[in-house]
Amino acid sequence: FIFAAPPLVVLCAGVGSRLGLGPKCLVDVNGATVFERLMTHCARRRRRVVVVVGYEAERVAAHARRACAAAGVEAPAIVENPDFRETNTSKSLLAALQEVPALRHCGLILAD
Image (tube, rainbow, N blue to C red):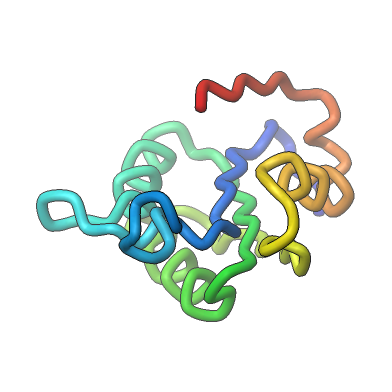
């Protein structure tokens, strides 16, 4: 994948066990999922999107594609973290970096 501007990376590989509602990106918040809300923001800035999936990968990827299309955002690049059950956010970020070399020039802040 090559992008003119750094893309938005959305890490969606986790099980969401602490929240207990499944993948957090699919949680509905007042009529829109967390991911849909992100894409509304992303569409205003015309950013490309990279989505790292793991748990319920097909469902999350399909939702990401639909949400991007609905928001007028280009189809997302989908990257899989097959080790999502044994690893953490860092492994998902590494998977994105391996697939999208342009991300090596971006900053990252984890405020988790």
